[in-house]
Image 1 (cartoon, rainbow, N blue to C red):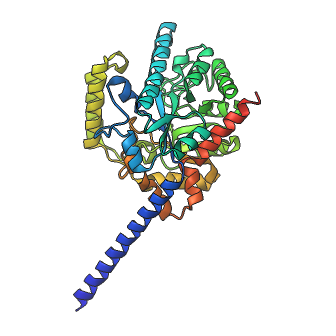
Image 2: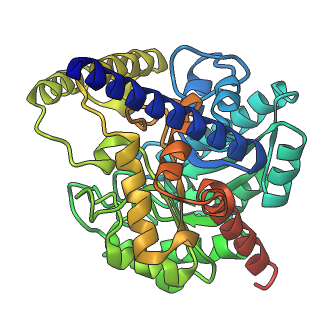
Image 3: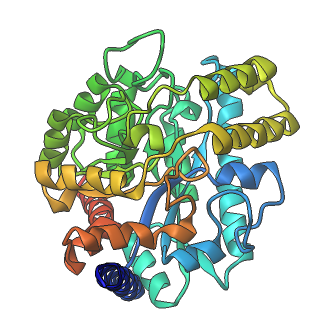
Length: 401
């Protein structure tokens, strides 16, 4: 009899859990149907320029395409034109400039080819209009200011094509500022003189300054100089995960003072400090030795490298979870409030955690937010309201300069 009662209790608990999950799923679905959801960073354009990748088709590989965005209830995406750091001579930066123009034009062409599903957006008003039309809003950004070289006029060229943010640097120092991860250490101890001009020009144009990847000193220089709110398009909290790519609590407070927003990056290593994984380290070391200089590779070699990299990561990598991601959102809210946090996945650039590996899984983040008691107005801000507010303010300040 006791065994029967125990079994009945377990069955009731399982039913209750199932009912709760179903209820959360329905609430998340309803919220996504009625708000604008925005992801501020994906590296999917790398797939577009290396192949005939079509955003309008559902793919089994990669993280982002329009059909899966619809499945996951993601309405707007910032497609980043990524440029790896290279030599800083005129010939190299000129080539990088031509490449970033080509990537931006490729993004636009891919969206135009799928005009029944998506449209290019450059303003919040356009994004909300496109959303009402039942289509996806495709924003563009640039990851790494390296292609500008030392030519300030190029910033306007990128703006005129449609880019609405520039991540000032990437994994190495450039002519704009120091990186948070350059093994050679600081070069400018923050922004360079040219970098200061870049920030001013972006303010003048109405272009968001992206502080992800830049060094702490560079971050504080930007905060001091910028007349407009800034974004960290794909960064997380250093208090929860000790990575120089993440923001400290003091940096979060400075960001709040600036009126900006941190878009939590769901790349596992920026969410949860990884446990030692010698097997993964060995496989990745072997891969780097096999392919040596990435910048010197042919497009075919880069494609093979990325395929082998994904295979190794899929087999040996231990991922953080959606709960870990929302821990970072919680932390930002506790430190600087609900008005300064959003989501920047870094999909197709390493982003992805258990239960959220592609854009098709985005509602799992919403379900976890609901579990923790976030209201619909809160979720509206996290899922796009905050970054659209920043872009609006950046635009408004442009007209005053």
